[in-house]
Length: 593
Image (tube, rainbow, N blue to C red; front, side, top):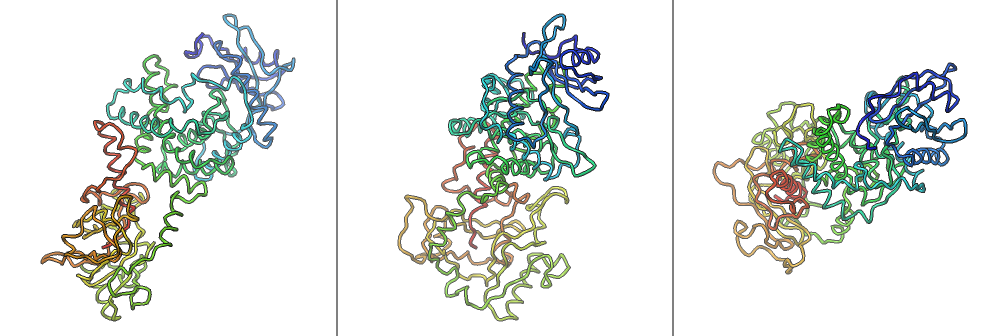
């Protein structure tokens, strides 16, 4: 018999009470609980003790019940502090009994009742609560690392993320063409990134379905915390990292900041069951794959069933999939690394070591910034230089204010500070959503304010990555981005100055030797006087999206390689994601103006 929905003649509550008494010696009243296939009951005895009676669908295999009972008893012995359900034995000492339902034999087993409410009904879902979900799953999975059972090998289980490729056949069932592209993109990334890594990824027995109705939260009147998981019906031996990925999917549904919600779950899980760097790097793709599996399953089930239970989370899943694919994979990777206590950027230490080993030349000809007279400006939110008038932050007014301050102090260089909160980011380039959404507020560069025409030199041997003049208000203005160190095959010649005018010499792809002049073109009549070295790295939402400020820039030569570039060019969504990756790639380069 195949599992194809609940039986029409379900076990009623009176029959459940009778089975509990006859098979387990537990006298109680029964109340039916929801279930996709099986009949579940909450039992309450006269003395107040509580149990859960589970009467399985006739098509349920005995081995899967044995798996769940064995796993719960294993966790109880390895991690007795966890409040997971405990297996209650029959009068004869067995974990599972068999009952005659008239039309079929039914497997019956009993568990202790875990008090609390589902995570779906607990509020608020703050970072501590979500981290607690991850920690609970991590402690359970750590206890299961040495557990094995023959029934845990379930190659046909559609919820095993290592087998997510099955959704390819379900994609045509998605009616909306735009949504089909989302599923195709999630699947393409899964096949390009996860499938080649499968031989290297850890496998263990996992719960596999930590949705917000399977996680039980304790007393809401005190500080709520996750205390247990229930419904082990999807338990299997799968990717260990799939456990926090699946939990993160349900944690981010409907959240204003899905990456923060997912990161909280990952932080808690890693603290209890450490993830390795390969697993962390694949989390973004696995979360997208799980969302794609969910919506593909809904599309498939709708062709054979009208039961709303199987499509209950479809709308939130589609919304979450769209938003999740809008988060750049590298941003998510860095966020997850930080959540796990690792340096956010994996290669940062190598970059820092490389920079420390370089002998940088002065950026300004004849001016040693280490000891030359200079003025450090306060352009922050409490700046007395700018005052409270918003008009003082306009380009023309700000330019006059800065150069007057330089003249009063008799210096040729003024410095704008790194990591300074500023109110200068008033353009839609820095966030065009509602005012309550996160906007760019922190300056991510060091400004050098100089007289127009001052020569600017390359401090290190490099290659010109981009040369442009972005004229939009609050945009970069004249811009040169250098790429360091030069890639293999690029000329490295001895340090030298420009042998011809900078306007002709500077172009993308050209070698810029150490101390080479990178002076911007002379101002032309009508051009606004430059107010400094730009305003940092604009972005639509802080740490989330690449900014449209990069749109006017020419495509890098050669264009940075990103995994999305390998996708078919006929897929518009994939190409847009690839262009977004390219813009984010450019935004991470060092700007010299």
